[in-house]
Image 1 (cartoon, rainbow, N blue to C red):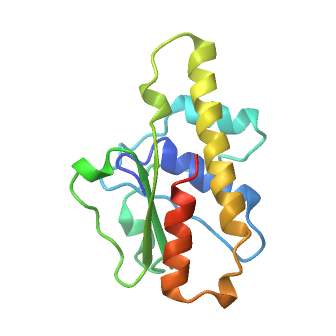
Image 2 (image 1 turned 90 degrees about the horizontal axis):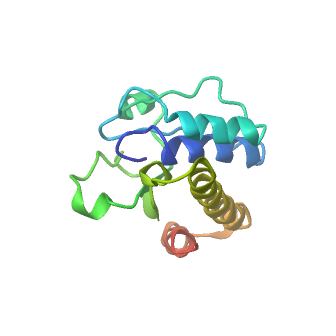
Length: 152
């Protein structure tokens, strides 16, 4: 989850669904969705060969029928923003990411910022997929998620 659901959370959704073992699914949303995807985020995913069909900027109504088990916020400015709806009993963790769409510079500098963000997301997902989810209590899973969120 992020504020606009146009860049970091969309990158995370697409990467998770591309890399995840069978039975896992990510859906992103925004507390104040922009209604559009960041063009460089979409290009980055295309360049990686990751499908973008079905991705769109959405709010938490995307979870009306199926509440999430885990909610991860990725907005690096979340501490200074109004807290979004947290979906009841779902485990929550914050995996802050700097916004690569805020980077000003050459095309190469902007692409590098997106590539760095993608690498951080991939490292965090690798750590998540390495967890033995069946053996962790909710408290242990929450602690593990928080540790993963500190990885850069």
